[in-house]
Length: 218
Image (cartoon, rainbow, N blue to C red; front, side, top):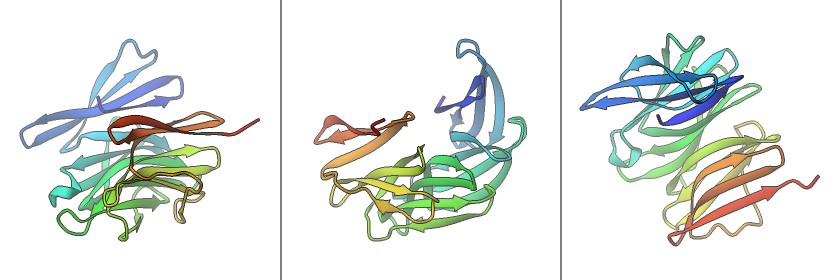
């Protein structure tokens, strides 16, 4: 298992198996997180992440890594979690996270424009099929994830040279602004969690674990 999501009253986990050059996505469903039923996904896929949005389910599958020069990311769609359709592919890219918004989907990850030339990128889609990238060629690094928090979309990751955390905010997935008032120097940000009034982003600085915390006062 590589990822898990809530499905109303239950849970959906996803991942896959890899045997040499052959891969197959797998999905596990549960009502109580104790007993799980497994189902096959499509061939040539390893799902991570998978989310629910308008019109059904969307999953991303990454082949290799952008820094190796041979990566591509596939986006799969399903209306019933039983049959899956390959809807899009991003060349020289890896998708680290996807969120559903009122007007579609926003994904975040890394894109390469040459071997070892890595840049953070977000993609915006209305239907989960046609995606528009927004990349930052001026930043050497990538995005590690994306979450929704209150009215904002938050993308996070790290630059490599210089080593520095990245935290971007957007209300539409198209226009992004860098977070202000936080010293991100030396940080590598890797994951995030949210509640109604709190955002937490975790990572490390100089090999030591760290937590960035934003809280809305009631």
